[in-house]
Figure (cartoon, rainbow, N blue to C red):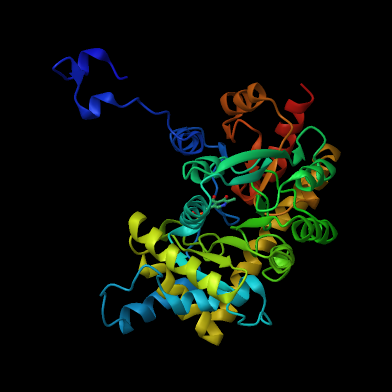
Length: 405
Ligand SMILES: Cc1ncc(COP(=O)(O)O)c(C=O)c1O
């Protein structure tokens, strides 16, 4: 309860808003503010969760600027579009996620969502509606926002061991053991690529093993695909998702375009659901429409219209693909430089996407912040492209010095 002196009381009871508990700020959001307010010129913000170019900027993609201009000149109405969002955009994203050859079996339905967060939350609501006792196995660690987004819908989250920060290795055997004990109908939360916070992705062979256990035990994958294109390229980054979705009787994929279109604040994503039959997929779709209506009614049109223009125009699409490649290329380049800087950072070279974890204690993370103006999450997670070109080797040296104690 907030400061008692401020609490308004009627008939011995606090009035509505005065019953609320104060809430801590999201630690990653708080970190951005701390970094912004640090006046030191050499400060390094690797806490932030957005792509940055070699100069430290998060640019608007050229293809997005061009499409926005086309949209501005051609859009004729802003009338309501419906809870499914921009259906043509969703159709254009479908082969990017599931492959150009993915046939229209009718078993996979999709709709536009406000970002990947919207897709995760909507998926969780669908799961909870279908099975109020549903459980989802979630890797440890996983993106900290998974718990509030999924568990707040009432889906029970059951942790499985995924990654060992001290040795920078996957707990693949323990993960498979957990999946092997899961019950038919249990969900498994998987990062499609570029695992956040660890950068430790499954190899294709490991994905095959996961697909086998999913099929054998009747598990339902819930894939979070937020960084397609930031690992090994748009196609390669979807390979694991395609394997598990193909193997599964039913599946959900929460997809985000916020990173690979660099349109973070515009909020662009999709949720795809695979049903056992085209009829069950259709019923799921109708439920999704109803659930979306109760949460955000309709997703924001602008980013979907922009992405639709890009993806349906061969030239703009080629430009988008090259811009995604360039972002992925910078990520791989910085990873290579960090890996080359010191043997203890070598593992970073083999990891994928924007994030990796350093084997630092929370105390060491705090010391780096106070002594050097280096901002990263308390877990040791850092964004490799939070490093401007000129800061890479200095950052590596300061981290290694701290690891040496
Ligand atoms: C693993 C993961 N999933 C989903 C999201 C959601 O992205 P957004 O809602 O910004 O599209 C993020 C964003 O940071 C993420 O890291």
